[in-house]
Amino acid sequence: MKLIAIDMDGTLLSTDGSISEGNRDTILEAQRQGNIVSISSGRSLHDAKQILHHAGLECPIITGNGGLSFESDEIIEHHILSAEVLSAMMDLLEKSGLYYEIYTNEGILIRKNGRALLDKEMDAIKDHSSSPELKKATRVIDIQYEQNGLIFVDDYQGIDFTDKGVYKLFVLSFDKEKLEKLRGN
Image (cartoon, helix red, strand yellow):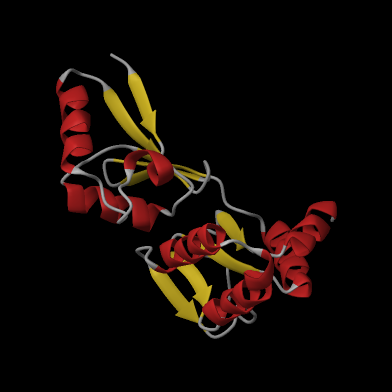
């Protein structure tokens, strides 16, 4: 028996975000041979589960960049961010003006005006980027908004995260200066 861990984006998923019939059949054959096929992804649990469901697959899932492990309808490992770390990270991101998402047990929290922030960044890089780079950036944004389990909120401030089990903050920016400044903090 072998453990086969597969990433989703850029590996398992087609350009439309689904698992192709060929990939599905290959996974099922590996499972029939007694191997454990696990999905290991930065995506949220809600998103990974839905993608697998649509493909008719059942696999253990390691998600949120290792923040959460799931098998047989049960969370088997959960590394949540402490209230102190979460607060410090959110304060830093708020001050930097960067777009970010909060991955929780309930789903992915996204600000309602988040897309506008990303569109503003896209406008700022249009003069300095090639058409393929802009297409790729647009696709990256689209992928974020095509995820399953999105919960749109007006603002992150005032949300009680005590029981939400936050396991990941996802930052997206095309502003290299802002990202470098964030890395320096």
